Length: 403
Image (cartoon, rainbow, N blue to C red):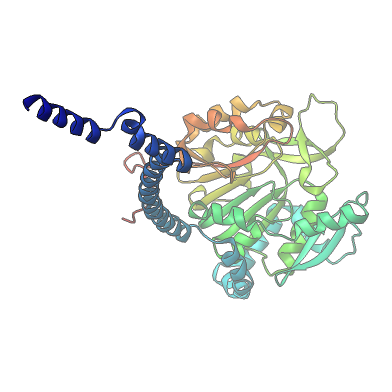
């Protein structure tokens, strides 16, 4: 009996316990489902996607906050930058006040003094009503504007050149306006007055003394002064400026803005012109250096010679200078760039590169001048720089907070 019961129990256990392939059936089914649906892989992908979505959301929130901050910073900086368009819109209205300002500045007396000191000016005034086929009369923003165009320039090239001369350099004016406002400006290499006349009209300076060595350019400059009511406010002199007083050779370029002085040793064609050391010219024109706020020098590579001739003026540290820097033209003038940079480092504490591609900081120590301008290469590389002295007790900080 006992044996029979035991056998019965064993048989029942054997019948109820899965045997063989049935044991692995659930696992097989799960693997089959995973294979058909990619289950495990899908689950891993879903977890990864969830993680990426969470990270992406956090990144978008952070990026949006940084973007909003950047917009506020850029907006604040834009409000600090003067707009060329606004300055351009002001000029015709300011031009209407010239007669009153000329009377207040005793312009007739200054004009008469210039005629006494500079006979070429008196002769140019007499010739201002004469016909000259190389002087083109045009209009720009309500002003009469004379453009010197050599007879060798014809056709489309002539029209392009005239059109370019009828655009005032408002971007340069706005870039330099914190430096250039004051009583007197010196425009060395004045051409037709495109740099100095707008500044006088806008009221940035009361008077501009202009030195221009080329007779045709000078004739256009004098006519621009006369026809726009600027006599005694813009004072033009037919003169080259360099490191010695005497005579110099001016070589003509195809276009009016490219004429340049050439070394005496160079066997190059040119015309003979009067030349002055800048300090001698300032004395000749009876200019008080304490009245000078700004000196612009665009002399096609002769900039180092101009500085060499101005030790007295350079001693007045309140004056800001704007220089054109072209390594190729400096080399042609016999003064390689390192020579110019050495003078600048000796005389000025800081500079600003006006090239729009240059980033911050805006003002840099002059010891960095050569390194900063190392990007200038080739025959066409050039820029304009501002040179100034900062009060050692007042550090230059270029932050976004107003004091």
